[in-house]
Length: 66
Image (cartoon, rainbow, N blue to C red; front, side):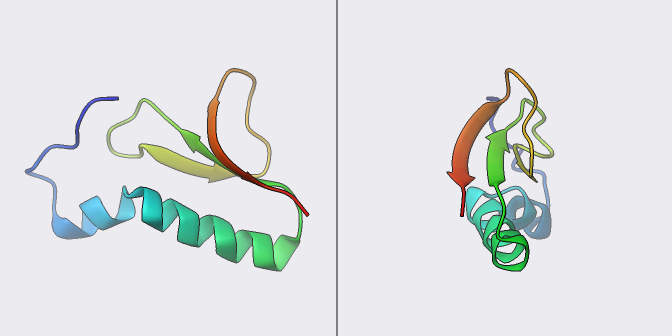
């Protein structure tokens, strides 16, 4: 995965972090009690994505199931 550009704002760096993806996934999991996944993308502006159903071939970093 390409490194994030240092020219990005501090807010963007926070939004792009794995820690933020974990927070979002935890909130969704608490509300839905279903399957929540954090997947790694190839987009440097969104290196992690939280979803309920990853597509085939996506790299799942974390999966929460009830």
